[in-house]
Image (cartoon, rainbow, N blue to C red; front, side):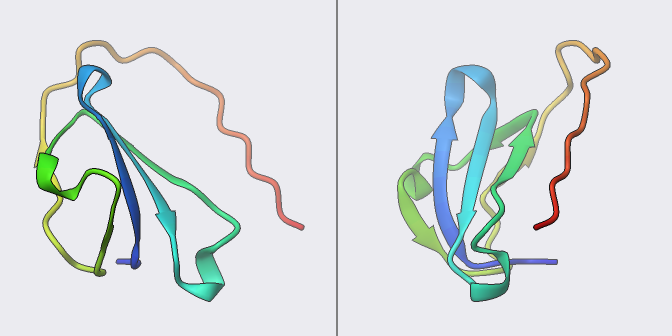
Length: 71
């Protein structure tokens, strides 16, 4: 689901972190990896549905634990 949010780009890691500004999503942080992000969105609020980058090939696929906390 597209969300409005503040976009932080980590180019060397090919990663984007979106901190949603929509009330229903404020308690979560969205991490997108293996993305070549558009640098003009770094540290800017972006509207839901905007194209923020292009998917890249994964450098490696290691198993990572997923922790979800519901409060």
